[in-house]
Image (cartoon, rainbow, N blue to C red; front, side, top):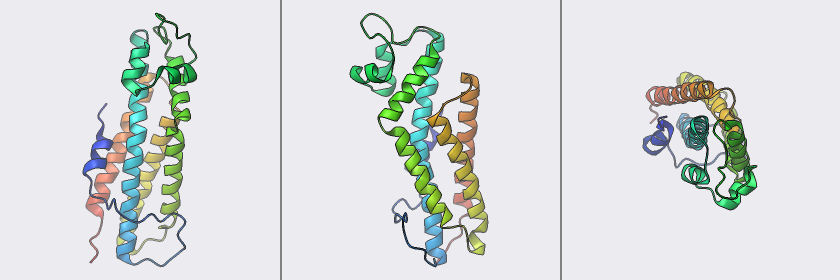
Length: 205
C-alpha cells in the first residue's frame, strides 16, 4: 500500500504556517485571507490523513498476516512498536511463551486488539479532534468569493473523502479485500482532490 498521503504531507506547499482559526470570531475576510484559510484546510486534511493512513496500513498488514499464519508478539512489536505490557492490556490473549498472540486465521481478534490499542493510546481521539476542527473551519468558509467557488466545492469533496478515510481507520469493516479496496479508493480520491485544489487555487495579490 503506497504511503502517498505521508509523502504529500511533507512536500505540498499549502501554507502550513497559517493561523489556527478555531474559536475565532466571525469576520469579513479579504480574498487573500480566505485563500489562506482554504489552503490550511487542505494542509490539515493531509496531516490528519497521514495519521489515518498509518493506522490503516497497520490494520491491513496485521490482517493479511493473520490470514496467512499465526501472529506473534514480535509481529506486533515490529508493526506497531507496542510494549508487552500494552499487548497484555489491549489484546485478549494468554501471553505466556511460547504461545502466539493469535492463531492462524484469528484475524478478528487481532483487529479488535489493534482497535483497543488505538483507542487506548489516543490515536482515535486525535483523528476525531482533527476532523471536528477541520469541519468547524470549513463551515466558516461556506460563503466563498466568486473566484474561490470551484476551489471551495472541491474542498468539500476532499473533506467528504477524508471523513470516510477517518471512519475506516476508526472502525475497519468488511473482508480484507473490501477493506483494502476502500482504503485504496479513498486514498486516491484524497490525493486527486488535493492535486486539483493546488492547480485551481487562484493567485491573490
